[in-house]
Image 1 (cartoon, rainbow, N blue to C red):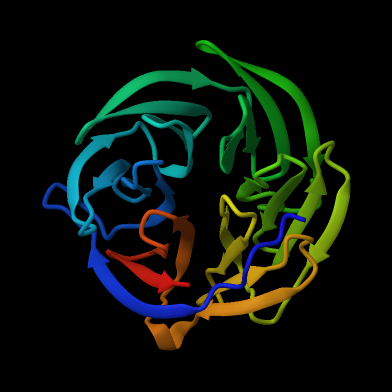
Image 2: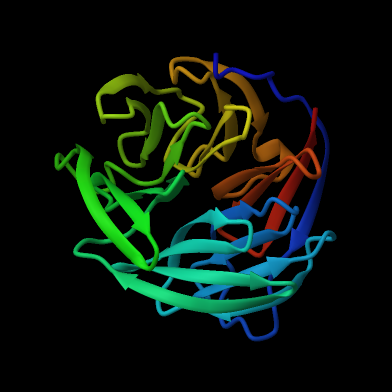
Length: 268
């Protein structure tokens, strides 16, 4: 089974990721952790990707052409960032971020996730599967579509085995679980999950989702049908959470917000 343990929060710290060259309050739409433990945050308001050190201080940054929406790890030193109608690849070279190639797509790029050379990309109304081959990004198929309103398909994540896909439906306040072929397996709603945005699946298959309007971070069962834990709320200082990521290096859950501070929860 793809279920690992339920997280318990053991401590919290807060870290400011605003840098002098920023013109606006930060909006951390995405976070990813490289295998060596390096943390990257995508700041939409300032159109930057920032590299953090082990103390969660910004040590390097690079600009992107529009506000980044999401980000995923491709290789131990390359990440892919969804920007407007394309994907910006960025190479992490020790403590420097170096922009690599940019690929234009035919649709808006919102959520992005990666699994074994497959890229899953959302357009805010559909989930597409692409294949990565060298410098090429090729459309394979449309896995899921909902044109009933705006932001029906926001962020996406994929289970470690690739058997399940998860998507947040922001204005419908839903977390959807799909089979690998796009079949809808489960729909999860919860009064504690309003405006679901940030979404992350840990290497052990634990599903984390944050409610931007409810100021919550929840752990949901891998089947996408039940809440296992409420990991953080407004009482913990949560304000408009937009992104969440687990670091196995530090056993922490990192939450990005619509604001200058990220929250780091030490978990067991």
